[in-house]
Length: 316
Image 1 (tube, helix red, strand yellow):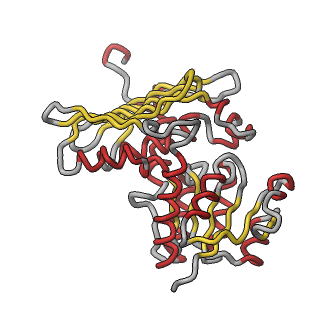
Image 2 (cartoon, helix red, strand yellow):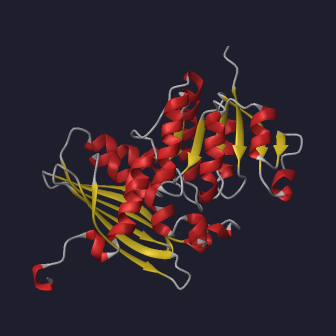
């Protein structure tokens, strides 16, 4: 029998419990090492896994078969880069990196080293989303609407970096945007940003945004993001050419706060085990984080009217 893959987890914040629970449930994984800069976060793993305060030491001493990277967005680049250079397959939380330029560096490195690089777009593994994708397969979609609405303060889990534009990348567009944009790409393929409105708070954090996109087939998409929503709403709507409208509620059937994430992260680690076990590199394809990151940057650029579209005739 093939032995389980030894998993290292860097970053023990709000998302790590979903990875760790999935690793415990799945026979293909064995948690071997954890890493965090906070002693308190490491203490609960005494006797359960090797503990490190620096990811470089984890890579050299624990020598994991694969690595989950769940650190703040601005640290994705150095942690992923050093793991890939060491030949260790990486599953990194979205976004792949803080900028598209950084994302391209990681994708190129993964290709050169022949090492898998998977961005954890957990919503594409949601049961309702998968059902919608199955229903639309082979049928013409004319419009897609993705809503990703929440009050961010309820989801921080003690991690204030989400509200720091320098560490997060901006706000709801930088952090929730990749998940929502990935769903658009999953249904429509390649798309282009055609318009964007962003509303920021006094700290420069984008709190609400509407992103409009189009595909070469003529299909359109709208992504609605909100970090000030009273509650939580996350769904996808697809209008077909025959007039039928299909809907996927990502939270339905998963009662409890963030309860939908348990099955999504189990599916992520199932796929990651397959990739890491056969050393199949994943770059900027369907599961790569680079296309979504490029759409995020296009949305930010488009939110500046002068760079989004040529002025109307009346304004010339």
